[in-house]
Length: 310
Image (cartoon, rainbow, N blue to C red; front, top):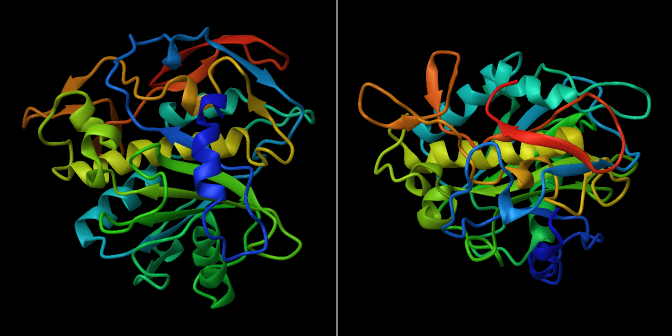
């Protein structure tokens, strides 16, 4: 991701690590800096270019696993579960299908998720996490204790509740994604950490950023968390082995989510006056735009634009 986030990486990596791997491959979603970028342009006031670096993309339908860390409510869970159970096959997720690898395989438009892919962790590592090593341990324990399967074609989200602290969370980043070779021996496990955006609404909550005091599903924390998860999900499917074998990223605006961070495009208003960007299934959501290549190809310095739908 963006090189300016090196400090974020070091903050998380140099903190206490419970696993053998001190993860230097972390790629973080920045905290909102107060500047709204016009729709279609890129974040960070940089050109809209991205590189293909030769690494893999997700060639098979990913399964989303969610570890609810802390006291997430039933309402929170229902909003986030619903989004990932229905985003597959949509024109929003179709944007990710423009990314291919050296084998010519595209990121699939489909996504697998249901509540069967969820696990609730009641603060097994406490509320003050020392660093990314403990995030990896949370995933490793969920797998080792047979709460979730060991799936190299999965994406494991550790969602921390508002009372959970992690170095850099809210001050430098809202979430991050990474591959790990330590969680399950012999497998590269893709995982992501995302905090409940209500912990730092001015920096991470989508509705607050656009000036809405509420949110489409009347749960600003959960709605804002969906937007950060969409960011990390899209980057994971287009750059799953980030730092190990890079795929889609560049020194211009970063990975696909970075390029469009906190860019929402044309906002719509629901019957309650709350702002949203997309209708997924029968529910409205507010999510950032995603980087769409202008042409389905591979190379360096490839142009694109930020879009909500393909």
